[in-house]
Amino acid sequence: MEAYRLQQLTSDLLDVSRIESGISLTYAMETVRINEIILDVVNGVKVSLKDGVSIETKIGGRNGVGCMEANNSNNSDNNDIEIYADKSRISQAISNIVVNAVKFTARGTIIVETNVSEDKESVEVKVRDSGSGIAEDILPNLFDKFVTKTLGNENKRGTGLGLYITKAIIDAHKGKIFAYNNKGGVGATFTIVIPSVCAADIRSGA
Image (cartoon, rainbow, N blue to C red; front, side, top):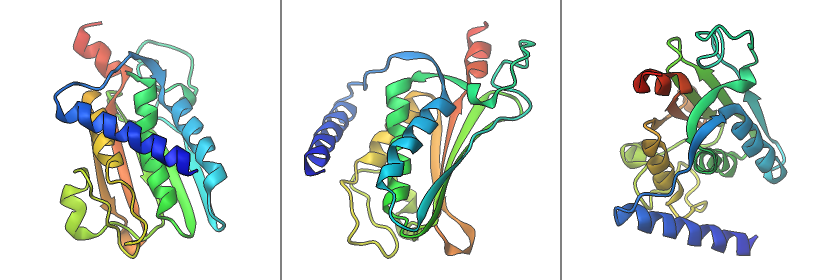
């Protein structure tokens, strides 16, 4: 485990160095199925769940999948929601959010959910946990480097680089990411919004 953490830290520091030097992270863009990536990430973290913590997925879409309905496809399988992305980097970004949720949830359920917007132009990924939430004073700077403080978990600190790198990855995909504390003071929700293949087709004139 310690060797893995050191390897991850080294990788994160290299990514941060590239971002800050103006050298873009490497992206191999292709059409990928976002829900397949999410299921892989969730299955990967299940082995590290603490007793009393569970994780669920709500894999879905809205009135069809991506551009499939617009293209008169008969396929209505919501597992086929597609985006144009670097599969490895998007997996890294989603994994960072899910792993954080697991880390800061002592008991309860983590829910990972996907939906397609009404206009088919974007895909929304939400990760909702039942942990201690995010300290209000750091919310505006949550995606800066070295921001790690959470409510009641001062001893559970990471490198403070994961969310910074995650935002850089989402920005590179012309998406956005934000977070807020859940109502009732139980946990937090991270939301990632990424353009769908449909949006990419519209902008390219395809």
